[in-house]
Amino acid sequence: MQFQQLLYFVAVAETRHFTHAAERVHVSQPSLSQQIRALETELGAELFSRARGNIGLTEAGEALLPLARRILADADTARQEVQELAQLRRGRVRLGATPSLCTGLLPEVLRVFHDRHPGIRLLIEEGGSHDLVRQLARGALDLALIVLPLPPGSPALTTVELLQEDLVVVSAASGKPPRRPARISDLRDQPLVMFRHGYDLRELTVAACRAAGFEPGFTVEGGEMDAVLGFVRAGLGVAVVPSMVAGRAGPGFRVTPLADPGLRRTIALAHRSDVAPPRAARELQRVLLDSRE
Image (cartoon, rainbow, N blue to C red; front, side, top):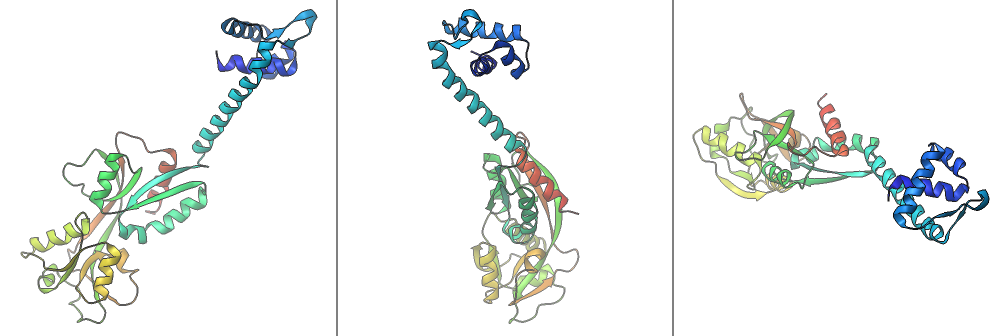
């Protein structure tokens, strides 16, 4: 049984005329009649009575008509659902991002995307860059904003550089002012508030301290971005954070740039190389890349 045959059957049942039905579905009358005969042969029963030129439904035809209409209606619904997805009327995007980008870059970008496609649900996963890479590999995310370079042993990801960001030192405004600009070596005698494992900022800071010849000391470690800033405001130590975060930290902080060559991180937009992102995700990707302007 073919979808086209059901379409022709319903057209004949509703018009009670083979020629008019053929005109409705835009085929020749002989082709339509041939498909109806093929359908009757497959079902093993005549669907129409054709006595004296009057077309009527047989008992088998009466039984088939509501089922055929339902099948055609379901097919039309399926077509509309797919078209809505294709036209970005509905759907979802699963985006991963580091906490600093969630508070800095993403709000404006997501506002632009939502204004254009209000029917698309945005599911945001906040986490460290290494965690996001693992979630991309598992298929739990469509896109992720991660920090380059990728860690060793990372899955095959397609990445596009989005921005480069300076890192700065934040300290409590009530504390002793640090040297301006600060040097990495100045952190030797400073208590550090440190992010949990899995945060690229932790690895960048520790690696920079070791390159300067010392092992950093932590007063508090294991926090997320908001917790780290709270601990710094309370005077528990200093932290190295992205300039984008420092600029939005609010009162209670002192922000000190790092002396050249300083510390910078590269943010990239990533997705799995072996799976093309869904249409809605590709549109969000375009909006994110346009944000570089």
